[in-house]
Length: 479
Image (cartoon, rainbow, N blue to C red; front, top):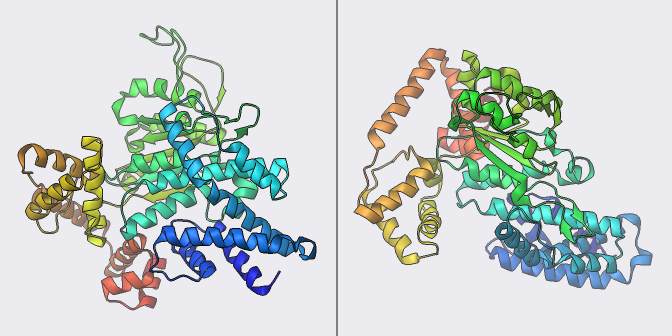
C-alpha cells in the first residue's frame, strides 16, 4: 500500500469514528477528498464514497503484501463503502418501520448488505454484527437529523445526542458498551416547550437491536421499544400503578391486572419519564430502587420483575433548588445523570441564527397543512417578523411558536407576552442570585460557565464578555 493510500484510508477510519454532527467529521471528509469547506456536504460525501470504492479496487490485489495495520485500514474502508452504498435502503426501512408501528418489517436490504461484506472477506458473524451497528448508526442519524435548526446551540445538541447513544468514542462503544447502555441514564433539562420530547425520542429509538437471520427482521421494532409517560398528568396514588403495574384487586378500582411501563419495556427499549421534577419523594425512592437493582414489584404483588431498558428523564424545573429544599433526592439525581443534556431555548437559537425562525416555521407549516408550502411559510415569517417585539423572550419556546403561527393564520395577529414574561424571568433570576449571596467573582465565573455551555468555546465566551481567553478558562474551571 502506497503512502498516499495509507493516509487516505487513515482519514476514512477517522471519519468513521468521528461524530457526524461535529466539526471533526467534516475535516476528515475534506482531508480525504481534498475538497474545500465551501463545497456542499452531499457533494463531498458522494466524492468520498466514490474515491473509497476506487481505492479499494486498486489496493485489493495487494492484500498478500499488506501488513496487519494496512489490512485493518482496508477493512475500515470496505465497511465505510458498504455502509454508504446502503444508506438509502436503510432510510427506506426506517420509514417503513415507522408506518408499520409495533410489528417488525422485513429487512429487504439485508441480503445485499451481508453479501457485499462476504465478498469483501468478512465472516458471517462480523458481517451480521456490522449490519446491526450500521442500522443503529443510520437510525440515530435519521432521528437526530430531524431536529430542525442550524444555530450553534442546536448543532451542539445534535452532537451531544449522538455521543449519548454511542459515547464519545464509538470504538469503545462497539467493543464494550453496545449491550450495556441500560446503565447510562440521561437527564434532559430545558424550559417548557423547547422540545425535550423530540430529543428523548431520538435517544430512545436509537438503541441497539439484534438482527434475526431466521426471520430476516430485526428482533424488535424501534417504534415499540420506546415508551413515554408524563408523570405530571397522574395523581400520586396512580403513578406507581402506571410505572410498575398492579395486581387485580390490589386496591379499590383494580378490577383487572395492569402492566406498567417498566413491565412493557424490552431489553432493547427505553422509557422516557417526562416531568420527573414533579414526582414525590416516595416515588423517587421506588424509582431509585429500579435504577440501582434493575428490579421492581407491581402494586399488590410479591413477585419481583426485571427491568432491562434504559431510562431517560426530563424536567423544566430547577433541580438545584429542588435538591436544596429536599424535594428531589440527591441520590436519585446522581443515579439519573450519567449524562445531562440541556435543550436550548428558542430565543438563544434565534439570537445565534435569525434564519432559524424561518426554518422552524417551515416545519410548523408542514405539520399544520400536511405538506411544505414556501408561500405560507414566507407569509407567516413576514407577519411574525413585522410584529415581533425587539429581543422577544419566547417564554413558550417552540410550543409558543406553533400557537403563534396558528393564531396568525386565524386572526392575523398575536398577543406577545414579552414584557411580563421577560420581567418575571429577570426578577426571578435576580432574586435567586440575591438569596445565594454570590461574590462578584463567583457571579462572573457562573456567567462564563453558562456562556461556555451555550457556545462551546473559550474564544466565543471571550468575545462576548470582552475578557481574554485565559481569564475565561480560569472562571469556567472554577465555576
